[in-house]
Image: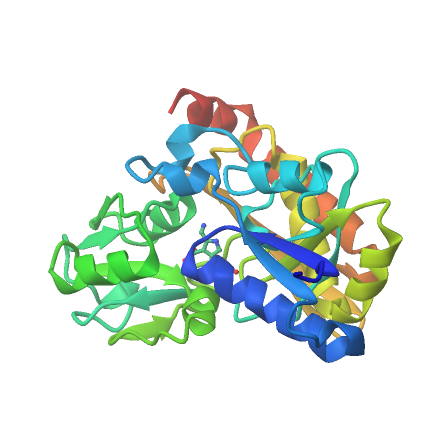
Length: 314
Ligand SMILES: NCc1[nH]cc(CCC(=O)O)c1CC(=O)O
């Protein structure tokens, strides 16, 4: 008879999601003797709306939590115990009864520029074509290089790199963290400095979600939480929450920590790159959430209602 596992991890089936779930499994086993038994932790693959819709840009689907809804339902009905997420894909408001209080040490938050034709965005020949379906990446590319053409680009990492090889586009952008976790280093890859392309909120951070009332699971997860990464993600997500009314907004944020001082850089930009607002806020790390909210409010004010009207009509 098969032994019942102690922890069931729910995850999407993409290679990146599976790599992240395996990482959490390995860290749990390293932290707890009883989880080293090969049957102690089970990985359960769950298909989400975001995985099933491959033919349209995600922003067009409009909804939040396209990669999380089905997984969260499985946690609430107790068919799984925890869910491993890229925090970048997790909506700021979680369903009642679920919490994320475990953030692993963050990977490189930056975007990768991938092209064999140029070393970076600034070096691309005029009129070059860049493939990305991220509104944020599109907007930031166009705000810096209005002469470039951005075309939608979906599919998993392998598919995108193949399209790049085929010459469908001159360059593409992906998260450094995803490439690292998959141990892929494409030819012509270079990290884009955050000063040129500010990352998405929480990019590079993995979070583990659980039932709020499940003290057994909370105790297992506690040693996996990385305090500094959690503080940075808290500030960035508080900024996002303040702006969330408009989920199609290209938003970017990155918090940095120096000792107990936190600096948060944030921006919002129109999808065509023609209008952009930046903010920097600094304060005590213990005020991470308040710093994030203040940054969000400042962006809301500097952008003004006209910015959001253009966005909504866009
Ligand atoms: N939206 C898909 C997604 N969600 C998280 C990552 C990368 C890993 C991370 O940010 O932690 C990616 C792929 C990408 O943007 O290249």
